[in-house]
Amino acid sequence: MRIGELEKHSGASRHTLRYYESLGLISAQRRANNYREYSPQTLSDLGFIQQAQNMGFSLGEIGEILQARREQQLDCAQGALLVAKKLAEVEQKIADLHKLRAFLRSEQQRLEASAAAQAAMRAQA
Image 1 (cartoon, one colour):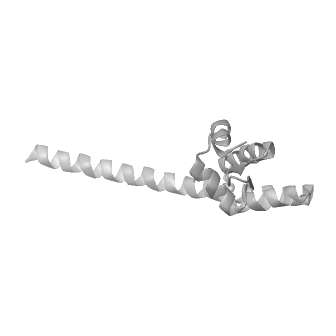
Image 2 (tube, one colour):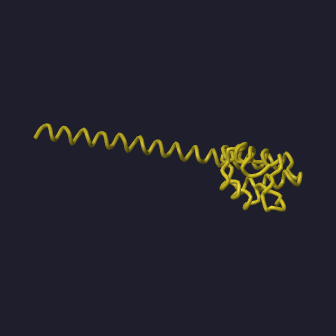
Image 3 (cartoon, one colour):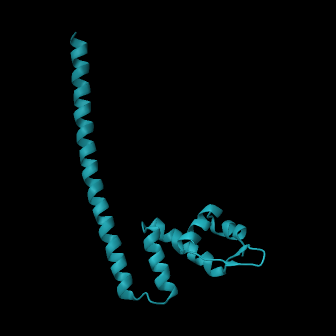
């Protein structure tokens, strides 16, 4: 399929498809007229890329996974390590967000109390 068809079926823009191709995430065969021709596997790869990005994987990590899958070198142990690493990153992000939420709540309360005190002072004046 040509790039327009792939764009239509995947929802990814031509710019994104060319970028993914430059990173080696997807590949195309060049026809005699220099048009890109994509295999049906490319559509499947794009689905995986989008899903992995939604789960927080970087394009670099996705590239490594795709390479291992293509070379049939990705085993369960490697998969488990990748998932464990990503889980640790997510856990850290959650902890950081909890700290940020506590700080923001504290600041909100401080600012609201300060605003109330200022309003009370203006009312007395």
